[in-house]
Structures are given as structure tokens and as C-alpha cells.
Image 1 (tube, rainbow, N blue to C red):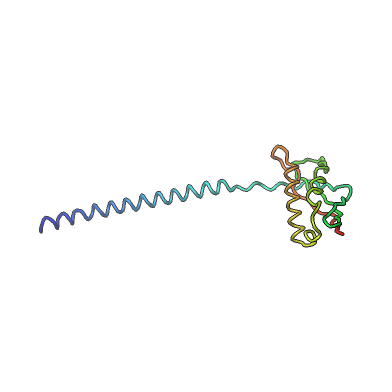
Image 2: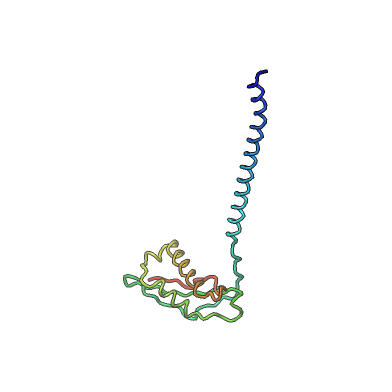
Amino acid sequence: MSKDETTTAADAPKKSKKMLMIIVIAAVVLLGGGGAGAFFMLKGDKAEAAPVKGSVVALEEAMTINLADGHYLKLNFSLQQTADAGSESVDTSEARELAIDEYTGKTLAELSTEKGREELKAELTSKIVKAYTEDGKKMVMGLYFTSFVTQ
């Protein structure tokens, strides 16, 4: 056997051990990085617990709101309070003002489709929930239209 053949045969196991070591290290790094990434992504996506429904507070009187082009909207709704609000009813004055601001000047076409009404209701609900959140506690979680008449 020549000297070249013995060195090549002796180098082969060293190369395969190095290659195996590289593959193992790469797998550990990839799996560890993937696991850590999944952990932090899932940890950040913790859903906030849905508030528990409390009492419902109805506005005493319907509102008449001026729309565009001489039309008007007769609107009344109730606020769904959370259990965090306690047994005392929230003051509905701010909700009335937000509703007037939201609907004033809207066109009859915007309010005549179900999609339009739902979009405006979602915007109003968001504003009301934000307005009735105190110290991180939501006092109101939604609203229900009890009257919605356009002319």
C-alpha cells in the first residue's frame, strides 16, 4: 500500500465525523431557534379574556340626527355593560354624543345597506368601548340598536 492510500483512508473517518458534527450543530441551532421563535410568538399572542356581560342600559329617548341631503335618522340604542361596571348604570351622555358625531352628515345610501350599517356600528362601538374604559377596565362592551329609522 502506498503512503497516499493510507492517508486517504485515515482522513475519511475524520471528515465524516466533522460533517456529522456540523449537521448535528446545525440541527440543534435550527430547532432551538424555531422553538424559541414559536415560544415568543405564542407568548405575545395571548388573547385578552373576553369581558363578562353585565346589565344593559337603555338610552331614555331616541335621538334625531341630521343626515346629508335633508334626510334624518331616528336612532336609539342600549349599552351592554360588563360585570366590571358593577350594578350601577353608566352615564349614557357620552355615548349619545359619540353617536351624534358618528352619524351626523352621513348619506342615506351609507345607512341603507346592511354592510354600511354594520361598519358604522362597529366604528361607534369601538369609540364607545374606548370612552367607557377606566383604568384598563372596560365598563361597556357593546351596543344594541333598539330603533334605527331613516327618512
